[in-house]
Length: 289
Image (cartoon, rainbow, N blue to C red):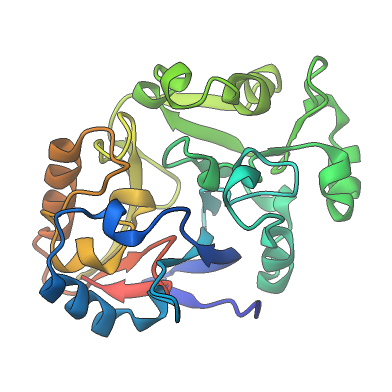
C-alpha cells in the first residue's frame, strides 16, 4: 500500500493521517448493518466506492492520526499492530504504522499524548509492543528501557507519551477482551503511562469528547480553531452508511441507542464553518460532515 501522508490544517494545528493497513471485513457487510436498505447501500457506495470490493465485501482502511500543534504531538489510536498483535486473528497484520510515522517525519519518542478511542484490537495494536515485533524501533525502545514492564516484556511504542483512556472503557476490559490486561493496560500502568479520564477532557491540542455506544467508554477528539472544526472519530462511525444515515445501527456496537445518540450529537454540531471528520475506516481519511 502507498504510504502517502494526507494532512488537514485547522488553524495552526495539523492533523496527519497515518495508514496502518487495509483489508476486507471478517463477515458480510449486510450482517454488519442489518437494517440498511438497498437504497442506503447504493447511496453509500456512490459516496465511498472504495469501501466495497469486486466481490461485494466491505473493504476497510485501518489508520491512526497524529495532531501536531505548538503544544506538542498527540496520537489518536494505534492501529492493527505488528504480526503478533491481538488483531492478528482477523485484521491484515502486520501493519505499517512505524513506516507511516517515518513518512510523516515523526519520531515516536516525540509523541507526548496517545488517546485510545476504545479497546477494540484494531485501535490499540501498536500501543504496546515487544522489541522483536518492531526491530526498527529498537533504538527508541532501548533508550527508554526503564519503561518496560518487568513481567510482560512489553513496552510502550511511544516511550514518552501519556496514554489516555476513558475510565468507563477501562472498567469493561474483562467484557471487551480480558487479554488486554496483559498486553496493554498492565504494561502501561507499570510504566506509569496510563491515565484514566472521566468524560470530556481538555488536551494539549483540542479535547477528548466522550462518545459512548460503540463501546461503553468510547471517546473521540475534537479540534477547533475559528469557524472550522475537525473530529477524529474513532469508531463513532465505521462506514459511510452511518455518516449518511446516523440512525443506522452497527451490529458490533455495545449499545446501539447510545451510539446513535453520540453520532447524531457530534455530526449535528452547529458550526459557522466546516466540520471535518478524520475517520479510521472510510476510504478517504478526511471528509466533511
